Length: 182
Image (tube, rainbow, N blue to C red):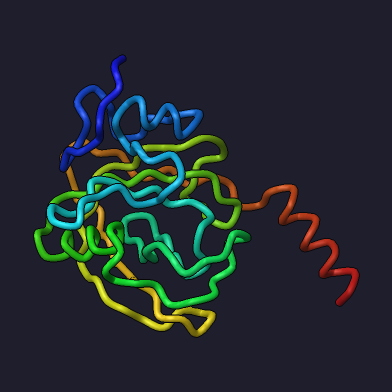
């Protein structure tokens, strides 16, 4: 398979919804989500091509077919939110543009123990979504966040997003510790 630039709205030819990749390098090689660090791949004039939903921001809410996705920026090197996000940054602007154009955005989910829709390992391509709403909103830490509501496009023959078991070893340990302290 040859490297692709991912600058496509919609599906990537040859990649089926539900495809699992072991790494971000694999996602990039397939052209599904080509950025190995950033969660938003887009163009500030054309819109967003893809997003990768993982552990990044505590304000993200994943309900499977609907996602409240927080833009990028305002975090320190440890991932702590320390300032407002800017709607004018390239990646955030791309999602704001997508809310206007309604072009489809590819959604990839990475491992996240707190999200039942995330894969247990690697990264999974979960299909196309449309940015239904885009706004600035105060986040949990009191900073202004670029907030995007994405809704999954219902396509014929598309499988439901898999739900994995929610009781992990880590969560079980936390429950035991809480019960002992209680």
